[in-house]
Picture 1: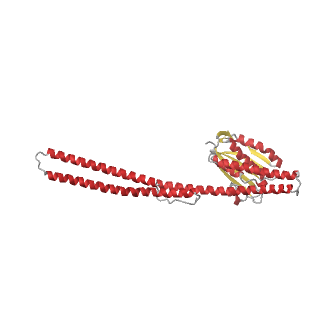
Picture 2 (picture 1 turned 90 degrees about the vertical axis):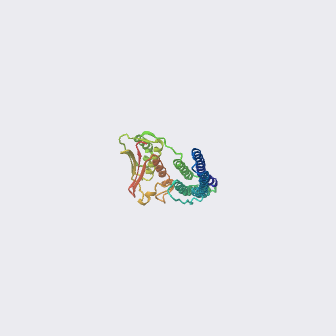
Picture 3 (picture 1 turned 60 degrees about the vertical axis):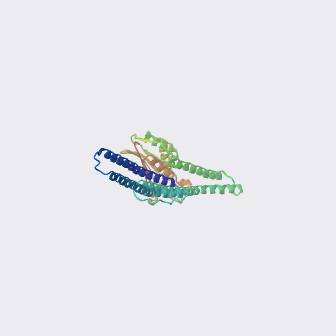
Length: 357
């Protein structure tokens, strides 16, 4: 920053001094020329040569002193202006260096409403975002560790018991170990999906698609699982609705919502899926007659690893990432999602996407 300070100061001094020197030299030359011209044209010589000489010297000296004082003033002002310009930049550099060392609570002081103030606000905003991302990273690391710890502990205890001969490696116990491994595999898969949709390089492959056709396809694919549990899956098929969307990612949304609805709907219940058209939006709702969610919990259900019922195990409650992925994908399409629920009466998840992008 010292180099920048010197360059700004030298530039200001050079410009001001150059203008003064050019003005001074031009004034002196022009004054001398016109006095000589006047003397040559004054044939009668009514004016005194001594007076003309002293007059010229007085003009030249006054201009020179003015130029010298102007250059001194330019130097002082230039140094002051350069310091005022570079001081906030020096402070911002110091804050950026502290942030690089991990002091994400560092902030720069912002004064005024000029471009430097805007830069200061941007740096402070960057610091806030970095702090938020660091907190999210720590939270996610803790959550992942927590989610992995239980199935790993179960596997370890089962394996130790069978190795030490306390348990016989029966088919049922091996099946229990297999279920824990599958749970871990699904968790890793969910984490991979979440990492992908949160990546800055994540892009959608948007095309014009028939929404009813895609929804109907995923309902047909889910029918077997619903019939096995004894839950009815109903689709209110309307007119064909076209929308701009990523077919693969839209499918991920439907699979997660249908899977959640089945998971929390008891045998004998039903799940209704409807596609409706609203102005420039297409809305898809998935309603179940399941156990429902407490109203106090609704604002947290889209957070990663969140479970409304803390007593619910991972087999019945899932990884807690599905709805987080759904929300990210809906927002990536430029849409919105909301959830409504009543304890003991069921839950409705509705998301709306713009018809064209």
